[in-house]
Length: 218
Image 1: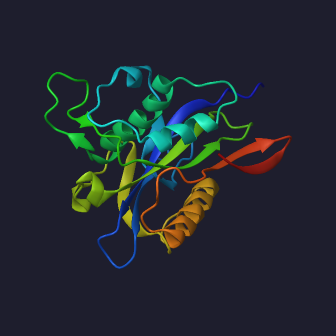
Image 2: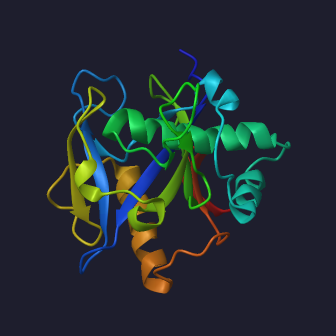
Image 3: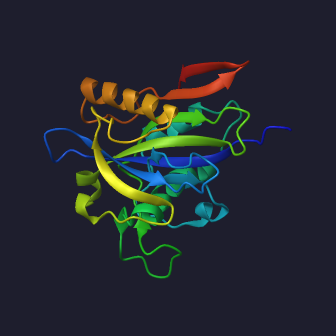
């Protein structure tokens, strides 16, 4: 059986730095899911066709856009790349009831106007061949204080259960996919290097090449 083509997807590492140690939001995927069932993951999901048409209040940082572009041999349109970032914010709202943006939105598909200005681009990973569903996932980071998010406002959803904040330095309380552990390791290293997570820094890109697991930098 031919392996399916990876679909664009996006995920947000929502970070709370109000305490002594930085915490990240994760939730457990329902055991009925085909993809990564019964594991804790960051909020996220695939890019939908309608994400291209979503209005937004603040645009993606130019340095983030350049890093997104760097991952494509053939040019990817800014509309497509922006839609990936918009998908991350939309999924965060759908899965955790967190709105990043302005609630003064008028007649729009979402109950808020997404604000992309504070998203950091942190990693990209393509699901290896052999899985029933494959995704080309872009991982963003967002600090709650910059986004005006109250860490107490998270709510479980049908997509993500047992939403919880975990210490970035100690994730032993939950079961995580291997790629999530790897990306959290990168996040820890970045926070140790510069806790502000500057825009535009090199981005690790994980994928399989000729049966080998590869880590490139974008």
